[in-house]
Image (cartoon, rainbow, N blue to C red):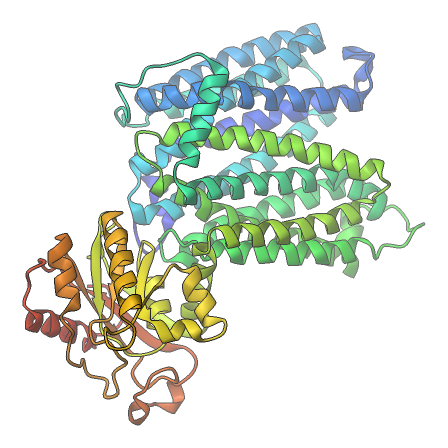
Length: 630
C-alpha cells in the first residue's frame, strides 16, 4: 500500500470490488430495515393492527437472531471454501431475498416483509465472517489498519445513506414498484461487484462441515478463546456494539424529549455520528503509521468516556418548555453545536477504538480459523446488542432519562476499559509508547522491516536513554519482552508499567543469582513461545553517545535456542533529557519533538562474533541520513 494514501487500495482489484460489494450490502440492509420501520410507523393501517413500537422490536429481534443461529456455520463455510465463491453465493441469495421482499410490498403483507427481514439478517450473518477474514487474505500486514479503516468508513456511511434514503422514499412515495426496484437494483449491483473479486483459495480445505448449531457455536467461541489477546479484542469489539446500540437506540428519544428537536434533528445527529466514525476510522492508518497500533484503543476508550460524560451535561442543558427546534434552528444554538460536537467526537473516538481491534484479530488469529473466529465475534456482538436493549429498557423502567442513560454509558465504558487493560496490559503499554512517540518525540520507524513478523528472535539495540523501551515498542510490529535491570522494577509507577508489559527483571550473578536464574528461565520460555525478546547488550546507558562494550550473554542465548539476532540502532536520543549524555544536549530539542530514527539491520546468525554484532549496532545507531525511507 502506498505510504501516501490508503485510498490507493480502492483502485486495486484485490480490494476495490470487495469494498464496493460491502458498501452495496450495507446500504441495502439499512434501506430495507428502515423502509419497513417507517412504513409500519407512518402507514400502519395498510400493514398491521399491531402497535408500531411492538413491530419495531420484533423487527430488530428477527434481524439479530440469525447472527446467533447461523454465524458458526457461516464461519465454517468461509474457512473451508474459497471466500470469493462464498461472497458471490451470498450476494446471489440477496437478489432472491429482495424479490421475496418485493412480493411483501405488493401484497402489503407484514409477515412476508418480516420474513424477508429475517432472511436479510441471515444473509448478513453469512457475509460477516467472510468479510473480515477476507482482508488478511488480500492485504499485507502494513495494510490491515488502512483496509479496516476504509471498511468501517464505508460501512457507517452506507448505513447513514440507507437510513436517509429510506426516509426520502417513504416521504415521496409508497409505490411498491419503486421500493422493490431500488432494493433489487442495489442487490444486483452488489452481485455484479462481487464478480470482480479475485479468488483467494481455501484456508482450511480439509475442514468437515457440521450443521449442529449449538456445538459449532461452542467450537467457534472455543477457537476465539484460544488466544488471549484475540479473545479480549473480540470482547472489546462487542462492547463497542453494546455501547453503540444503547446510544443509538436512545438518540430519537434524546432528540425529541431532551433536545426539543424535530425528526430532522435525529437525522442530523445520526449523520454527525456516522461521519465521526468514518473520519476516526480513516485517521487510524495515519496515526498508526500503517501498523496494528493497539495504543489507539485506550485513546479511543478515553475519548468515548469523556465525550459521553460531556454529552450528559450538554443534553441536560436544554430547558423544559423550549420551542421545538428544526435542524436549522438546532445547529444555530450553542447548546446544539455542543451536542453535535460531542456526538461527532464519540464517533471519531469509536473509530480509533474499533479499527485496531479488528486489525489485531485478523493479524493474530490462526489463518485456517479466522472466519470461525470472526463468526464468534458476530455471535458475541449479537448477544451484547440484545443485552444493551435489556439494559436500556431496565434503566427506562427505573425512571432514568436519556441524558442519565448516556451518563451511565460513560461510567460503564470507563469501568469496562479499565478491566480489559488490567487483563491485557499490552494495550496500556502500547498506549504509553504511542503517546510518547507522538507527544514527545518525532520517531521514524520506516527502517524496521527486518524485525520478523513471526517467530522468535533476540533484539539487540544500543542503549541511549530511559525512553528506549517505549521507542522500540512503538517501532516494533509485534509485542517485545524487554530484559531490564531489576532495580528499575522498584521505581514507583514505572516498575508497575514494565511489569504490566511483561518485562523480565535481571541482575548479575554477583548481585542476585536467583533473579538471574529466573530471568534466563523466563527468556527461554519466551523464545520457545516464539516471542521477541529485547536485550540491551551493553548492559547500561551510554554516557558518551557511542556504543559501549557488549556483554556476551545475548550470544549464548542465541546459540542455546538457535534464534536469530536482530541488530537495532536508535539515533537521536543522545543528549535528550532522559539520557546520560549531558554534554551532547541540544537545549532546543531536549524535551519535546526530538527527531528520532529507529533502524533494524538484517538478521544475524546465532553464532555471530560479538565484534560483528557491535559493528552492526554502531553502524545502525550512527546513521544520520535523515528520515526518509530506505
